[in-house]
Image (tube, rainbow, N blue to C red; front, side, top):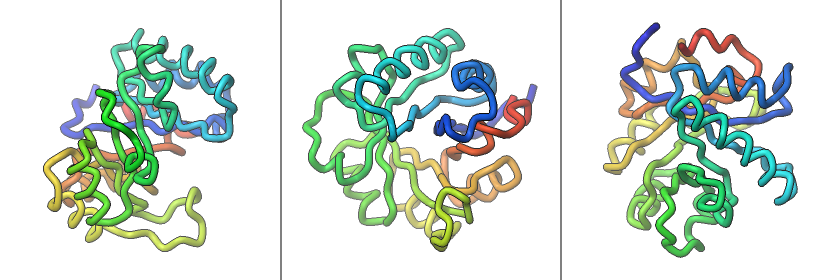
Length: 191
């Protein structure tokens, strides 16, 4: 087993899964990740809550954190470990004591998120990715600027994999967020 000196966050998209989603979550939770962000933005509130209940249980079974995406109203009810939101949503939230991460796309947003009490930042997209087809990646210089503008952890997103993780860490990030690699890739790479 490889011991990681950086943190890996899985961001979900069940539509990319080629096997049962919850079975895949169980495999991911047994890998070398720190946490899973349950993103699933296309679900209704009730569908998301039902899925979140199961994912929180799986994550906790294997000692991993489960971060809900945008659904702040159910974080405490389900025993989730935190919340991830966009900068726009974060600006309108009241400080409710929930550990919250924020997606940021500029140094100014990262600094604002930190001032407003964010627990971490996800900065991106860093490399070319199918999730952002046609959009130019912001690159490692952008990541370096964000990382050095705040004191809270910054995680890179967008085309992140084990082959480019070292460059992300060298830019100052605490780790990286991976979606496709976990949803349809070889999970054993992350053990």
